[in-house]
Image (cartoon, rainbow, N blue to C red; front, side):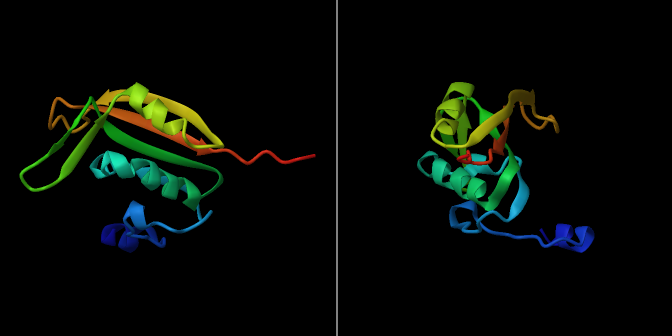
Length: 130
């Protein structure tokens, strides 16, 4: 975050997504390989907080490890795995969200044989009564 502050000229927030309370402040959010550490029981709340922080038509990109189950590593980091069906079931719980794209990729840094489940969501403008 400090590098982003120094080089972007932008306001950079460091807030755990579970504690995010900003409303309609951002055009987009990028959560590459970060939500995979959120416990499954908290993921809906975490994604909901991010979506609430987006303005109408704002987009959210996130990536999760593709698979099933979860593991906690020796350094106490939690990794929760999702398949496309589990992700779609989660997304269906949100209103006014359009799925732009869901796709899988190999690990770009080739550190592991893990596959990544990527997702772009768009916060739709609520339907207005005429």
